[in-house]
Amino acid sequence: MSQVARVEQTNAPVIAAESVTILQIIQQVALTPNADIDKMERLMVTHQNIQALQTKQQFDEALAAMQEELPVIGERGGIKDKNGRIQSTYAL
Image (cartoon, rainbow, N blue to C red; front, side):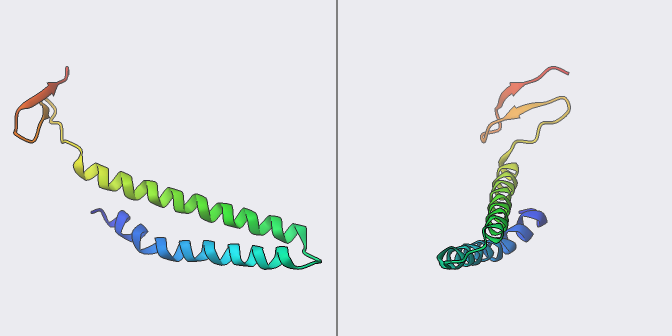
């Protein structure tokens, strides 16, 4: 696993916790009779940003895992299957 993927995996629970905390704050503000709409909107934008970051982290983790499984194609070679037989070749 790449170092980038390891770092992102360790940060994922922290970001998820931040997202839950922001949602709790939004809920508390929404229940207040004199809730400040501007604050609510800023909190929602913050929540959306955190969600976007979580989505990016999930994509990056999946990409890192997939890259480990991709075949290596030599400059003048072909794609080999698991049994070592050439599956397909490509033109130079």
